[in-house]
Image (tube, one colour):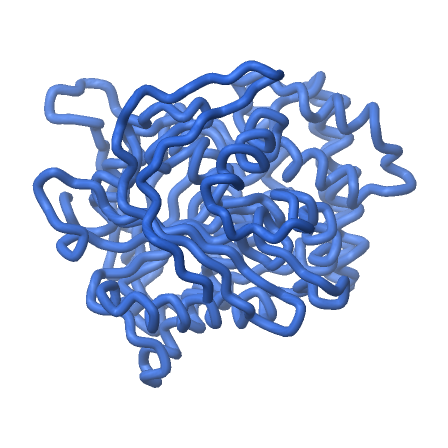
Amino acid sequence: MLKLPQAIALFSLATLGSAVYLEEAKEPKQAWGYVTVRPNASMFWWLYYADSPAKNFTQLPLIMWLQGGPGASGTGFGNFEEIGPLDSDLKPRKTTWLQTASLLFVDNPVGTGFSYVNDTLAYATNLCTVSTDLMVVLREFFKSKPEFQKVPFYIFSESYGGKMAAGIALELHKAVQAGTIKCNFLGVALGDSWISPLDSVISWGPYLYSTSYLDDKGLKQVTTAAKKVLDAMNKRQFKLATLLWSKAEDTIEEYTNGVNFYNILTQDTTSSTAAASVASETVPVLKLFQRHVQHQSKDKLSDLMNGPIRKKLKIIPDHVKWGGQSKDVFANMAEDFMKNVIDIVEDLLAANVNVTVYNGQLDLIVSTIGQEAWLRKLKWPMLKKFTAQRWKPLYVGSESTATAAFHKSYENLDFFWILKAGHMVPADQGDMALKMVKMVTRQCR
C-alpha cells in the first residue's frame, strides 16, 4: 500500500481554459493509497477523518461507502456528488456525512474510478471475486490504520453497491469472528440496492401505472417485457436475463416518453442519448452501461477527477484515467447482474449482523415496492414480527412539521422509506439522509 502525507493544500480547477480558484479553507485530514488485491489488479481507497468540532475521530464511527454500477466510482460520485466534504464545484457540502463519521471511499470493483487492472483477465466477473478483493483492501487498511480497529465500522452502499456490500459484509463478519481482520464491524446499510433484480423489474409496471406514467396498453407491454426476464431467470439464463432487462427498459422509455429511472419527477437526458448512440440489438450491455454508469461520470466530474484531483493525489499511474475502465468493469459483470442475494441478507440477519434497508420514494430502477417484495421473501424467523411493527414518521429536525421519512425496526433489521428522494438518496434529501446515518450508527434515535 502506498502512503502519503495527509493533504491539506487547496487546489485550482481549470475549466474550459479558465482557472477557477477555491476560497481559502482548510480541508479535513485525509489519507489515500493503492492495494494490490491480485496480480495485475490494484484498488484505490480514499479516507477522510471525521471533521467534528465536538468530538475526536476516534469517538465517531467509520463508514465505508460503496457505489453502484458496477463501475461507478465512490471516490468520485459518492464523494463529490453525495456525501463528501466538497461538492463537484469544490464548495463545502452542508450535509456531508463527515460531520458525524469518518468516510472511506473505495473504487470497487477493480477497474472502477482510479482502480485499475493491467490484464483484461483480472476484471471481476462475479460477487465472490468482488468480495474477496475488498477483503484484501480492508485487511490491509485496518492493519495500516490501527487507530480505526476499535472504532465502530459500518458499510453504506447504493444501487449495485448494495449487492456488493451484502456479500462483503458477510465475508467481513466471518473474518472478524475468525480473528483474521481486526475491526469493530457493526452493520451494513443497503441503499436503493440491487438485492433482487427480478423483484425490481417486476415492480416497474405497477409502480409506473400507479404514478400515471403508463396507461393500460403501456402496462401490458411493460408486464410482457418483465415476464420475459422472469422466464429467463427461471431457466437460469442469467446473461439472457440481463439483455432482456435492457429491452424492458427500452419498452419503459418508449411508453413513458423517457421517464427518469433514477427519479421519476426529474427530467432525464441520459436515456435518450444512450438510445441515439447505441443500437440495442447489437450491444445491449453497452447501452446498459451508458444508461446506468456513464451518467455518474459526466464531463464535469470527469474533468475534476482527471484534472485537479489527480494532481492533488500524486500517486495515480500515468496510464490510468479515472473512469477509463468502467465500461469493461460493467461488461465483465454482465452474467452476475440479475442474480439475487436474498440468501446473503438472510445469512447476515441470522448471524445477528445489523442490516438496514433504505429506499427513495421516487426511485424507479430500484423501486420501494420491489424492495418490499424481496423483504417478504426472507427466511428469517423474526420477519412476521418485523412486518407487524407500525412504521414511525421521521422529521428532519425538532422544528420540522413535514414528514421526511418513515422508519420500521425490529431486532437487527431496519427499513427507512425516504420521501421525495430518488435513487441517490443523499443527493436528493441530504438532511434526512444525514439523520438516518446518525440513527443507524446509534448517535440518535
